[in-house]
Length: 189
Image 1 (tube, rainbow, N blue to C red):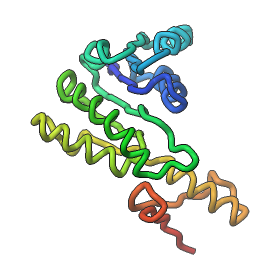
Image 2: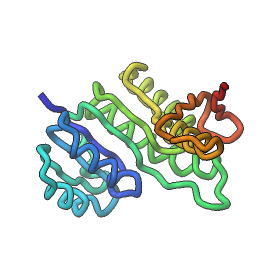
Image 3: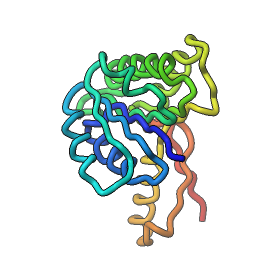
Image 4: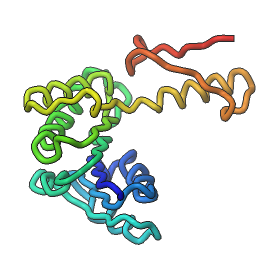
């Protein structure tokens, strides 16, 4: 039996390729794509792939509830990317509100879903999501995740290039926050 996956921020630079990967996943039966604009076009493009899940696009706050209804997994790449000259505080001030509103919808319409947050700064948006879920009485720490794979991939690539190694053979664990002052790649030998 497959699952319903909702991608919130599906029309963005991370959301579109992520939605395509989810459409290609054999465990996904239904793919719900949400964003503030352009989602029907992304959904139409993905619905033409030779893959099994049904794909539907939802646009705007009025369609968020229907997008989330029955979702088993919600992935949130929504928000703005950090631009030159923008501080992490600037980024936080924009993306925090976006994540808060989306997680309020999750708490109401699919409180049992697993939630993967990609929106930066991840080390700040995940705690916001947790507080929203706690306030709504549906917080489960086993179902809320911050996706920081990018930190690991970058560390692997940087070390491989510096050491002249094949990146496929490099595995650098990364701990700490998702910021220059708190991120710590663990290097040995």
